[in-house]
Amino acid sequence: MRVLLMVRPVLLVAAPFFLALGLVLPLVHFETLYFFDRTPSLIEIIISLWQGGDGLLSAIVAVVSILLPLLKMIGIAAEVMTADGGAGSLFYRRVVPQLSKWSMMDVLLVAIVIAAAKTTGLANAFTQPGLWCYAASSMISGLLHSLTGDASGPK
Image (cartoon, rainbow, N blue to C red; front, side, top):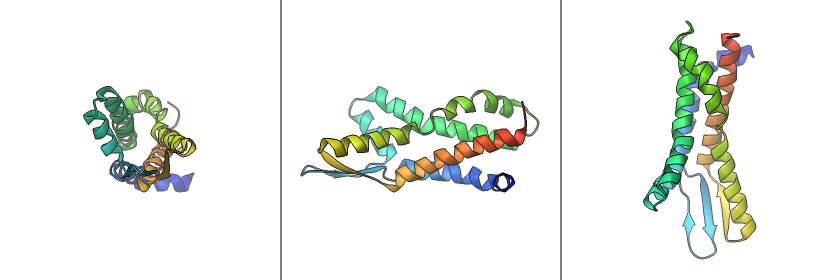
């Protein structure tokens, strides 16, 4: 555990780095029988939903996929930076645990889409680096959340 606390600064940089890569790198590669071959990133999926008239779905995906992970990382960084138990600590104790509940939802949804595409026979789907980077970001921020909670003691 002590070693993990020592690498916490590296993890604070790695989590947003992997999130950024997860947003812009391709998430999944679809190969349909003869119709198309597509490798969208998360940002491209959100834009495509918006342009296709699914504004509400696009907004939900953007909030859950981009905004909530960013808020979680900001909350963890604020907790690490403020040792006095001030506003950062209050945000960390109240909001970050709620955000943590949504951490891996996107990865799960993409896995379901891949499984559905493969089992229906309509397309072949393969994971791409963006999904793995996004998953790494979620796992690193979850680890940071637990390390920060352990390091700050009982509250």
